[in-house]
Length: 380
Ligand SMILES: *Cc1c(COP(=O)(O)O)cnc(C)c1O
Image (cartoon, rainbow, N blue to C red):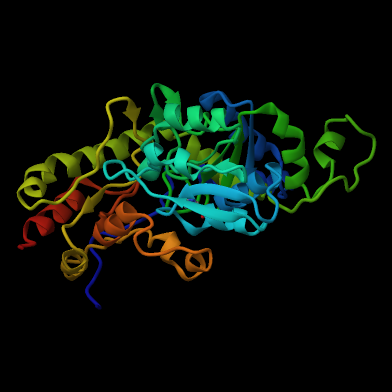
């Protein structure tokens, strides 16, 4: 495995004024959290998405941990989430002593299967956490309806879905809370970073406190109290203003970035459609009422063996592709919570079949053509 890499899976590139803004943040000499660039980046997101309050965080993982603190998750509480997601979605709640209840996903969008959701709700259910996989919106009408009837809050893991929409409304604006990721593998990044979106204003004040080590420092800086002190549990969830400066440079280029990513996605989709059909390979399904966020392009190979052979085939041609998400309910930790084979059959199947193609903000059409040509040579 020492072949040169021709097409990388990911490449987090500078797309605008990131470096200039970082230099300004350093020159301003207030490089800790909640400086001018943090305010600009969060204001941009609040305005663009129409969210009452956006708090930048050190990661999406930390925004998810804030969900659990804000929703007051206690030992023994149950939280419903898909098995087909990143570990942070579940860890955030398990850290508070919650029991994860794993939901299966729909075979078409790989999103939490809303038709199986209500059967998982019990009197102990304290949160429902949908994940907009690949930036394609979950069936939020049905999910909110079920959650509303049982008075359970919804909190969206929107790590993939920034600027995607469901029925014309931005993903991340449906739940009481939502979490974004600015990790280097996401559409917009600052290396490591995230954001908590607060749609229900009743959580704003406590979120500010939790994010600032359990102190009322934010109120102090607004002049609302004359000293600041320890008022609640909390941690340090605010990023340096230097990272916020980088992030602002990225977010300002959102139209350029998203239109580039749309071209990448459309290229793969158009070039692979016929081949996929004749080889019984699945391609992403985007429901008509959803505007996806163009986070990734995946394929579903017929079997695990073919998927592994496919990844190795591309690797020999210098192209990096990756699989995604081992089912959480079958992980070592998931089994400790009672996870069994057969609990989430769709998740178990697609986890063996799925492969993600190179997808980033620096892919040229010649790179995409190399990927497609290599795929066409994969014979089975
Ligand atoms: C990337 C990702 C996270 C974690 O994001 P970090 O910013 O790296 O903490 C959480 N959930 C999902 C679905 C993700 O893809």
